[in-house]
Length: 106
Image 1 (cartoon, rainbow, N blue to C red):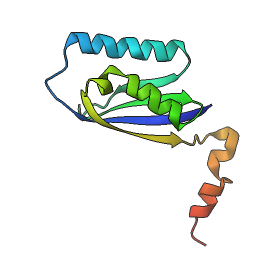
Image 2 (cartoon, helix red, strand yellow; image 1 turned 90 degrees about the vertical axis):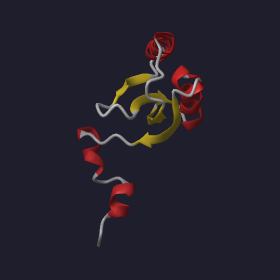
Image 3 (tube, rainbow, N blue to C red; image 1 turned 45 degrees about the horizontal axis):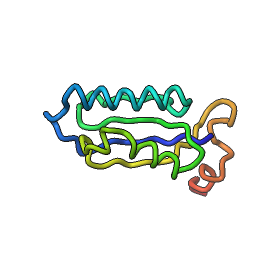
Image 4 (tube, rainbow, N blue to C red; image 1 turned 180 degrees about the vertical axis):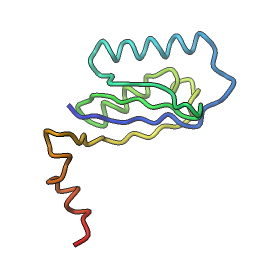
């Protein structure tokens, strides 16, 4: 399973009603129950939000994001999706990853 970081951007401030919020939360609940949601939430600056998804590929991630009422109803007008390469103790913090070694100055 791959992880995808979604940034929801270009929010229409002052236009969130309780019905839209409830539909968005239902969407997040469904993602969570399906094992697709790692974490979600707004940034403290109240400009953007983030969702981290567990998906097979980018196409699945896009489909899930585009089902979100926040996107469908253009509360957030745009979003970015990037695949996250997780660095942890198990993979030595990616020290031996071709992406890491390819970025080293020799």
